[in-house]
Image (cartoon, rainbow, N blue to C red; front, side):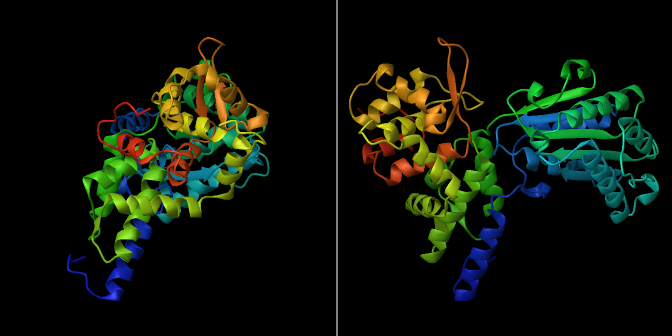
Length: 412
């Protein structure tokens, strides 16, 4: 779009473009995919080795679905024999429902892409076993590269389904079935997703997806903005990225609302004050689940500073997996309270937040001396930070330091 936008229709068209590009949903377009180069390569290597399968796991909201959607498209123009089926698992699934749906989707994918002759399989089963799944997939042409992606596999509750799926992958390996299975789910370890995973070590490629780096989140904004007339100032991008806490969904959502703020002011450059407006819009649009979880965690008849300590947890420095320790909370809590504080001042709060009483907003790992905490729903972390800024729990001096490029010591 030309830079000299003048008419109302032009501005409405630009707003529509932003809404489509920054919608926060998992992507299936390779050109919009940002970062994750190492993980893309590992998944492609697994597919090309045949008889290898992938388990992709990590926190909610780190981009697992997007990665599984697009990793194979990087070479799809040169390797025309990819046939990809993607299904979404659910708590109602058993082994038959899951794998009949997977076979049916693979067959449909082959038909829609003109490759039905490469995937001559039958999916018309009332009940299916691992051996029957293996026999069907052995029918696939050696010239095909079939991939079955089972997303949200962590939602499967049926223990037999999990055991039989593990057995199916074993059969694939033992009989050199060339179809690659990719299991995608929310989990901290592979053991949370795969039964008897140690017996599958030779065939499984385990990929733990952590939060995205600052550079990868910048790439998300730049790739999308480059398709429009909108530009983001360096400070605006930095603020969005710091607030996102490594979660691409929030990068897209805050960038979208900030761009709307600029567009409605008839500007093509998104600035830091537009991000302030984006924070207000984000809180207004937040799901009721966020608001309820926040109320459950901080509700009290007394002045217990629950809101301040939860905000300090959200601001604490974390490792790549989003975990922090009580020591990491001391500095932000002191800054919020404007007084030097110690762990003893909020230790009970951490226990509350990781218990039924506090709605289990945090999860706790490790023994008494090496406890680590993380937000159970990572989406809550940016929500708590933005709510803290909106409610003025973070004063302007602390906010300036928090959002500057080289984060320093917060003032107390």
